[in-house]
Image (cartoon, rainbow, N blue to C red; front, side, top):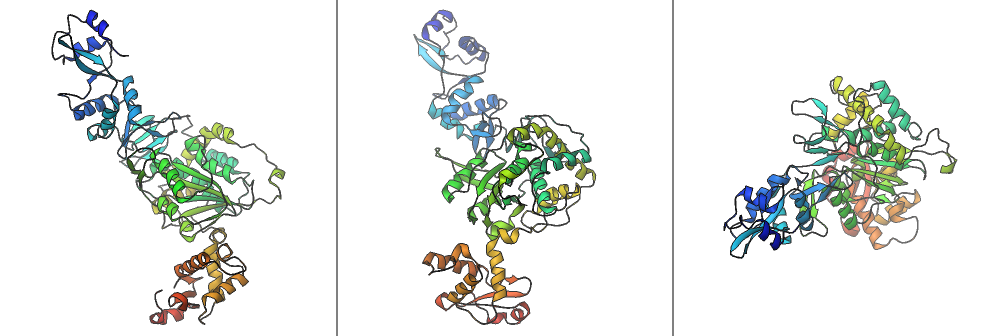
Length: 527
């Protein structure tokens, strides 16, 4: 509320005779408020001093620092929102009264005043302000397990935890003493009607996806996490709902982001997710071939940076986002395959609406089941901890620390190893599968590029690139040539080495036994 001159004159005529009213008690009396009083920057008042004093007031009122920016919790209470200069101007007025000193009728009087936009911009760029705010890396909507410095595992407390840099705003309480048999019954009942295509492996990965988001704070800082890809043979198999079963326990109502878009749009979505402190992003119903170096780089990056849309500033912060992808007939590149774990569903019914279910499962029911699922996941963690934190039967070079912890938790609970080689991987990675077939078909006789195209078409290989008839477009020739070069001197099925010899139009392709290739490597040439 602006303080007018007339009330000041009548109410404080005796107390406004001082030329420099710096006494805090006098300022408090004049401005008629119990909130802390801060003089705005101006003559004899540096912006840096104002910024530091303001931080001392608001650092206990839900304003945080992350990646060089100031944040508040978003209205949904499940993520972060960047504080803009205009927002800061009124936001701080809930906690502090800003004022300026004005000369009036020969005396200097304190007037309430909203901070200017220029001062707000200066404060938000000030290290004196940012460095005093609590550093926040993640927001949790449930009490999640954390590894303390002494090595013990405990559930995060409600509120801000300075050791893990996590703010917990729990949306539900859950049983912290559920037994392992009860926990497995909860999880098995939840997943019981999903038509997993294999015996054990896909279900183990589904449980690992649930555990991955639940134990995120438990993972060592900088741990790389897998991409979870849910594949199905037809619409209606339940892949999206299965992905939500992994996300909803730890994060509540699930937000889907649709299919992957072009690089520019995808980069905006990923940067936004990092800035908001989101723990997941779900690309739903992807139908095309996934070959995204940008997505691969994101999945393996501990830190992520970019320019903020609509703000002339950049952000660089910890990447806490786990990627989920669902798709029918979706194929992936070899690089994406090795960074991913696959869950395959197979629906035998011709039409999805012909399927019969014993229970209904939707977003609302998942939210109602959150306490039971969280209690079950906590029971799995406690069992693994009590057993001495065993490692899984297999390792994974793309995400080793995640594999040791999450793979160990899932296997210790009796769900099998989620790191087992996926039976679906040859169908998901069509390029790799087709190269294995091509290597089998070739012999040591050098083969021209056009002949390779003919062999591939005859056996139905690489159809997404070269089709099955007609002349190749220059772009298709280039794409197919680059793919073949990528596999130069790679060994397939442990016995046949694919070789690209020569350059340009003189390139020849052939396959030799690995033993023969080992003795004749001096005859191979770089492309």
